[in-house]
Image (cartoon, protein in one colour):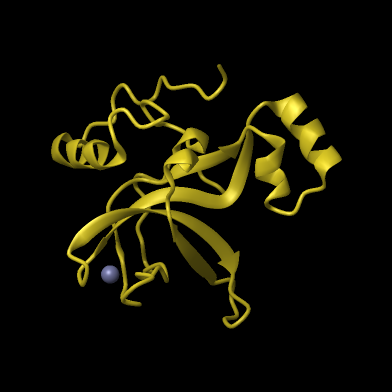
Length: 149
Ligand SMILES: [Zn+2]
């Protein structure tokens, strides 16, 4: 279901993503940054057995974490943009395959697991990076970043 290029995708339906503080709808303010596991612990935290996690990391180096990503959202009540670690899950309440989303503030460490980030480890800081990319709307120079290294 994952599509590489969603630039031209029309959003017919708003995703059910709410501000954890205000419970109001959040507007997306960035692209999605996919997350990868590059340590067995990352997979173990998600319920994988230690041996399977070790084997997978050893063979793949970076394992994509499906249904998880980093994304910035604008909250009208907060009047602020913030980065969140989003986890998508299937919503048992709704039929027809609608998803629910769980938001948690994105810790700095998570950026090291994200794809397409200039400098994992925070230089420039996430805030600066956000402001700057919003202003010039350019992600050039971001693509060359490799997790393997
Ligand atoms: Zn809010």
